[in-house]
Image (cartoon, rainbow, N blue to C red; front, side):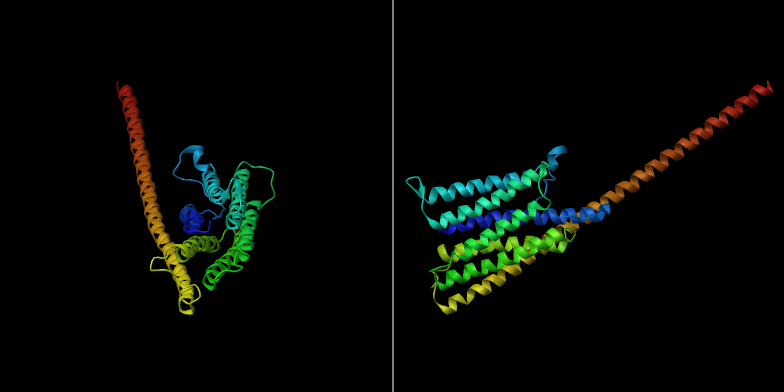
Amino acid sequence: MGNFGGHALPGSIFVLISFWHIISLYKRYYRCKRENSKFVSAVWFPCSCLCGKAESWPIEPVMRVILIIIALALEIYTGSKNGVLYMTGNIQHVTMYFFFGLASFIDILVYFQANLPTHLDYAMIFLANGVEFILFRFHLHGRSSLDVLLHTLLLYILVALAVIIVLEMRYRNNLLIAMTCRFVILLQGTWFWQVGSVLYKPMFGKWDQEDHEQIMLIPTYFGVHIGVNLLIILLLGSVISCWSNRKQKQCLNDMYTMKRLINTTIHAQTVVDLNDESGEEDGDEFQKAY
């Protein structure tokens, strides 16, 4: 959709996914440290708030598919006339959503242990990212200088994301690489919001799309997005680290209490056994005396 909503919707999806992944990555990393186990990243994360077998269900991929179906329906509805999808911008967005939906569907198949090639889940995300790059690369013909710059910065994000996806697929035990990937996804989401805001819903008056002074502000805004998103990730990491340390101390206290209880129980049982043995010996001596 060539309006604010058409940019805010995919931006919101990317932001939601990135926040979920950032929190899940931190929780998994600190849990692995507590349990002295190996950290492994993933393309999706289970919902630990559920109980039993439901905890491992592919809730995230299913929710992604649902959100993408809603986005597809909106794009088709707003870009159609007399039952025909005719707006090229909407057609491009539909294509982008289709490939991300396909990647989410592959995640579900991988969960159910379908006979698929190794790392196909990562390959599908890489493919969807590549299709998005091609669509936006040829989305700029005949656009204003401001519009071109906004989408060019988005292309830089997509190139960085393609590189980091390959690195994460290769080094799945590296938290920094996995977190960098989610940082870039978060940046992509917030920049979608920025593009829609500048082009279709400016907060402080309409932008002059050919004015050099105003165009120079866009890279500054991009830098602000990088800095703010980085601070958000660091803040989340600090909060989850404190929560993890508190949980670890609680576990240690519980273990210490349990050990004391076990030792006390063993000691009490030993005293009882000794008393029983002493009572039996006194009884034997009493019988011998009489």
